Length: 315
Image 1 (spheres, rainbow, N blue to C red):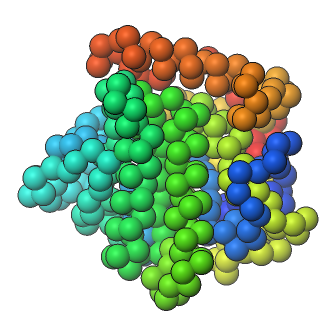
Image 2: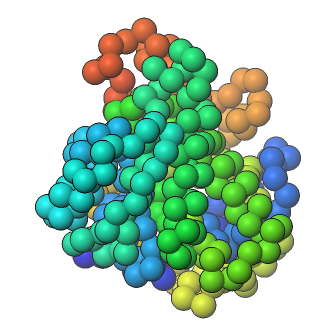
């Protein structure tokens, strides 16, 4: 069952519904009520997002062929036509992206982004720049092709071994800078992206986005929820409809079958990302980073993260 675009909550709605909490630290960017209506967050199967004039991003390898994980799910859902088109494209460089049709997917296009393999790119200190380049290339392709919506998975945060917290920070900061430049340049309305969606599928990625989004997209005022796009549901509807927060995913661990979720209080009380004594979640990422540097290519999956969500509220 597909997820309608109108059921994907924007940040303004999530703040109003208390599902995103402002950071206790000074934000990295200035508040913008407009931008907070143009970014959404959802946990679920990216192949189920119904985006009539939008694209989902497929995180893939340089061959553009089925690489398992998200890539495998995208190819399986799109059908054989997607693979046939990818075979005609002669691959794609790391840090770049290319666009194809969507075939049997409920969106208009698929943008294929080739993220860096963390342990390789880190040797030359190119990991962050290559990852940011993936997001910029994907956003530009969306604009150039007249799309008004784009949905990103956490690029490189799976089998490519990029620590979830670091990957989320690159993603969020890059999207913020891109959208902000568009606002300042005042491009034609029809060529501006109306919505950028961060679609996570693992709890560790979701936790990272929940913590970092308020740093780069802080709430603009106490009435964030009053600003919404025409198709966006109201704060009351977001409070009572949790299907969009826990949509099933073929490549994710099983989700909890409860109406709502919350983060463990221990996570809420820990230092922010700018504190030198970052919380245990970030410490685990540092340990993962050391392990990835020393491990073989087949050993850099992040599935061993110990974080769990418990019943209660999600955002």
